[in-house]
Image 1 (cartoon, helix red, strand yellow):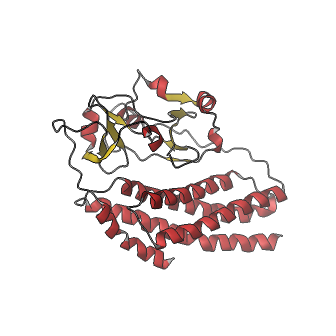
Image 2: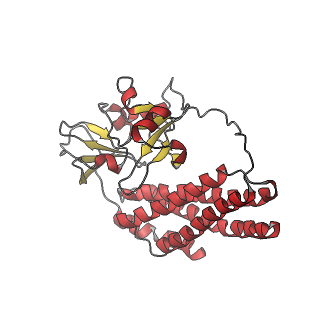
Image 3: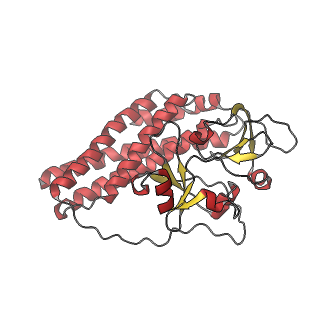
Length: 325
């Protein structure tokens, strides 16, 4: 594991090699249809249509039938994107409202199902081009969304969408509230059922950690295949973490469950770190932006450190489990 953490430093070199000197976005430079505009310091992208308008792109599946010119791109600051004409975003499965929070159903072309990413504020929703006039077309209540797309939101992985408007300080618009946490009554599972589910998730995670170590043993951040494989493994971690946290352990396995849950929480945080780094790499970082290169490298280091903390936690959980059988 130490070698992997050291290896994160080596990733800074291919990051710089993959970086692109994207020009600044402006309102005067003519750009072809399909040009890509990125919000500085975030993974958020807008694609230019034939009329010259910029549409926020929710995921790659939404771009399947679009003409996208990845080689023609620019980078703009928040002020630029706040001032552009607001037009409909390009989404594959829209946004879903579950209680108060609103989620982007982000469904990449390489994935079997979408991931629900919590949009952190109304400012972000508006920046993406969703206003009062089109809100009802793009934001669906949970029941309506599940009926339209034939998906159960409880079965989908969840995460947080990186903020697009953090720090704008727009008056009168508060972040979307998730409401106070309400403990859910939990009926303890039968011992056999609990052990089977727990074993299933632990085995999936242990296999995935092995594959992840191999991926970072020979990193290739310029390769879309490599980045897709990393995303796939991170999805396994996040799904396992969510599944374990939803289990109701029998009384004598409470201590075991606590250790496994702690390990899974570490992995869930590691997955967020890895995914953040991959998003930064996806469309290149300007060579001059050394702060962004350092940020991506730091997120990789944080993720690797958290992944390293999981092994002793799982070992302790297995020891407790064997002692209780």
